Image (cartoon, rainbow, N blue to C red):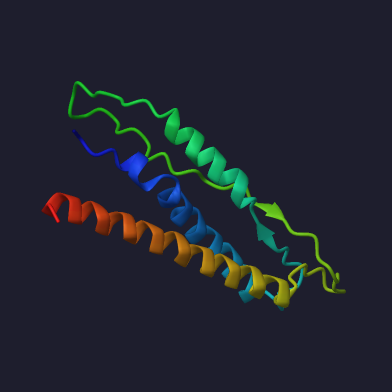
Length: 133
């Protein structure tokens, strides 16, 4: 019986990719705390994860009949960035609230680690099954 990695990993592989992208966006927000007119960005993680898992379930395997055919896309969802409304608007037009961004970054890092730990456990379990332990 073949192993289905999509079912074995559930949505945690997509979650890791999206958490990594979100870390980059939040880090950019933090780095631009003092940049005039910079607008804080973020995306709805839950909506993007649902979109990624839906895309994964709707995925169609394409067969190529020639070596020069264009390979299908990897299926990674590109998040739709939205602007964050500031709690305390600044006079220079910057909408980054450093404390909010740092809290969201820490939360995202913790959830990234949680998904990574879960995936690591799944991979270790599959390795043990393959070894017959």
